[in-house]
Length: 204
Image 1 (cartoon, one colour):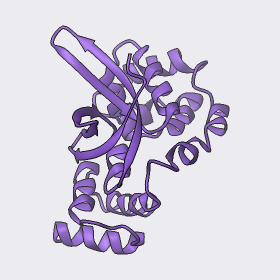
Image 2 (cartoon, one colour):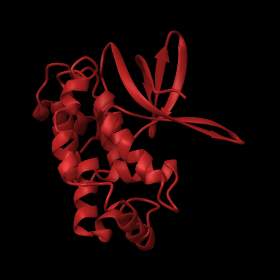
Image 3 (spheres, helix red, strand yellow):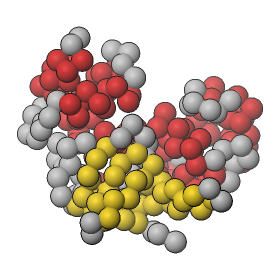
Image 4 (cartoon, one colour):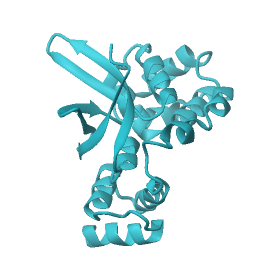
């Protein structure tokens, strides 16, 4: 079992990242938000991983936070949800948003994720209502900062704000992330300037 991988981001694809670990490139399936957070990051990053072994191959899925990996594993225990479905769900909503949806029985919010129908969403709520609790959100509140201090650049929050602004304009997450990556080195720039550069790349 591979618990985590530590290396440098060599490339970012639509639904995965290539992590260079000692000269070996590992393709890791990640959420859209993870792709955005790793865009432009310099130096080594640590990605907590889940290894899927199937007859037709091996695939690795990864997360920057241990809590996201925990939630991912819980989702795999729900009938009808596989690794790709779990990744799609966590790309549509953060782990804490999912906790809130489960706690309030909001199947409609969960079913908005690609590949997650209303019946699967309702089953998820039933299966995880005692496993995904709102109080856990407080326990893991500082985890992103603690784990990310040595792996995600200080500029990630500015990129995140720019990403949210693009999403508010109706731009799909994958296109928004691609535009921010195409904006080049945005180290030290604020969200407004990153947004302007990304929009120029999209010619909006």
